[in-house]
Amino acid sequence: MVIAKLFRSIRQYLPSTIATPLLVSGEVVLECTIPFYMAELVNRIKAGATVKEIASFGGILAIMAVGSLLFGMLAGMTCATASCGFGKNLRADMYDAVNDFSFNNIDEFSTSSLVTRMTTDVTNVQNAFMMITRIAVRSPFMLIFALIMAFRLGGRMAWIFAVVIPILAGTLIMVASRAMPLFRRIFKKYDRMNESIEENIIGMRVVKSFVREEYEQSKFDDASEEVRKDFTKAEKILAWNAPVMQFCLYVVMVFVLSFGSYVVISSRGLEIDVGQITALLTYSFMILSSLMMMSMIFVMITLATESALRIVQVLEAKSDIVSPDPESAIESVADGSIEFENVRFAYAGNPDNDVLSDINLKIASGETIGIIGTTGSGKSSLVQLIPRLYDATGGTVRVGGIDVKNYDLTVLRNSVAMVLQKNVLFEGTIKDNLRWGNPDATLEEMKEACRLSCSEEFIESKEGGYDYKIDHGGANISGGQKQRLCIARALLKKPKIIIFDDSTSAVDTKTDAIIRKGMKKYIPETTKIIIAQRTASVEDADKIIVIDGGRIESIGTHEELLNNSVIYNEIYTSQNKGGDENGK
Image (cartoon, rainbow, N blue to C red; front, side, top):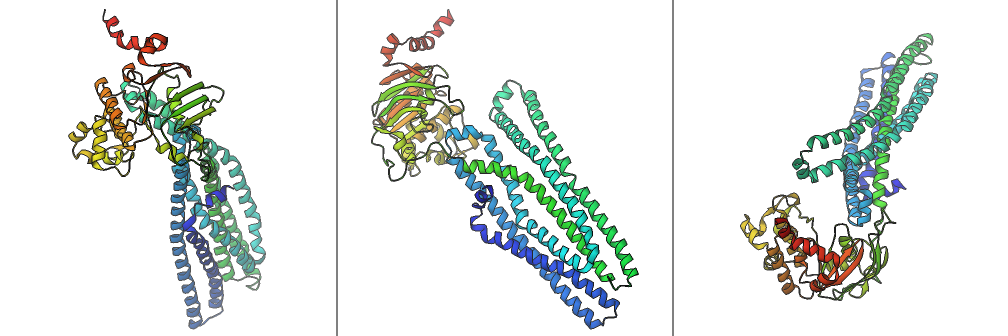
């Protein structure tokens, strides 16, 4: 099953994959035939061959050597093409699978684990694939061919291989049975170590501001030490391969030279001659080197097996959020109306702990809705159900009067724009980032959106203006500038519904008010949902929803909630009178 799943990633590199073992087979046939002709040439020279006979044999040997060289070179080229192409396709297939993941899938694997699987694990499988298509064909083929020739030329002396081969096989079985559990454990520790790296890089400013470099370094050193210990144990086990192989090689050499010499002398060359002894030694090297290469393949496959299983886990993971059948999927969203009916929601990792419960809510198309509540009350979880970033655990969410599960997923998400508090910009120009909202947006449309989001002024101050290059993660612009660019990007989408998840927290209240006023004129028919910590950001909303503990505590206008909602009143009072009280 695992092999079949990985085999699908070969695709256009199948001809190179097939050609490699065929070319290797030709190389091995010629390479194994050369000692046979060498033995015959030695025996003929001993018997007094003419120069013409020697030249004839020499010519045949030269042709076979050149042929073996050409086959080997071509096999190397096709093997490199096939293995590197396979690795590229495998990464692409995994990336496609990850792009289809729901947030639950991402939560299950973790970002650092997915990165490890797409880099380290794919490299392990690619290296194993390269060895399988070339060396794994060459070694068994050479072993069998050389054994046949050894028994043909060496007679009873060739039975020495019946002794050494079981020794080597037993060693390989021992190595596999003990090394595999260690490799499984190592990859899990790799994931944890990468999580530590990711966490530290993302939170570098926090680490430095709290002067916790030494503490974090100690944590990383501990994780790295755990990986080292397990790798050391695994390598100690794998280290048995080489000495056992060398021992068997020397046993065969001593046996062939001593017993072979005895047979040549005692039989006066009638049972076996010098040429056969020479060929048998060569075949001994071939047999044992083949076994050595097979042990290397075995080690690589042992390592790659766990990587392959981890890759297939990603490829086989099915998103729990999928579009309905194309025949029945709704292909357009009528308007921006939203309805929650008896909705409850719990994250997959903790299904018994409801984040939202008993949510009943109706929002008319074009309304401006404010959502406010304490940290962890479920505000973000609520709005993530609208574009199906998560699916409700119970109840129904409707957009435009239709259950969101009945829409084509692309159609639904194209009708909903989200601006998050943790805004993400991608490496590229400001234009490139704005066109995520509308790939066909003109410069004038971009300028209009940026003017409404109060980002036009700072853009024009940058060298190159809209062609200004944004660094990875938007590191070369401020948090407020990032938020405003992300708002402009969402406005360019001109969606049926636009959601601001505390997305103006890094801008001042005056700019916040200008942005909200501009949106009313620019997208009057769009439903606007504003999650905010500041009551000032939602005071002029048509309705304000107060959420507490995953439930709707109250709904109303700003004035109504001041009179009817204890939570809203407390938030408003703390934000607007706290300064006076503290100042007394």
